[in-house]
Image 1: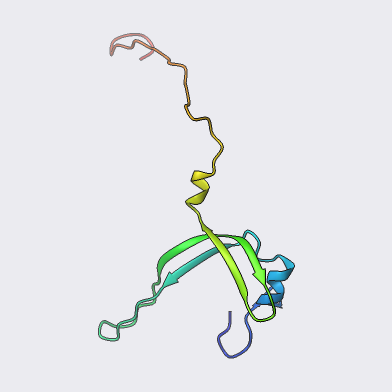
Image 2: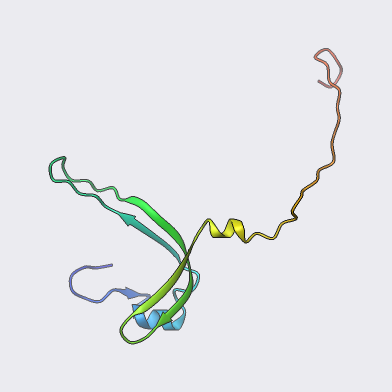
Length: 100
């Protein structure tokens, strides 16, 4: 992405048009913060603040509204049995026995 006054492009399209074409559906998004303090020098490392995936996109001529779910929301949506059972394997093993 260039910050020289030209518009930001996604796959060669402006952001509003790319959103309408579905390029942002399911995209991974990361929001980071950069704290700068001239007294301690230049800091080039940003702190990861939020990451997730785009769930819903609403685009018009002036703006794009993204609904983003956190990656942790996938843990709550997993289809798993409530109780998981495993067969027990009982093995008697002594330190001097065969196969130990």
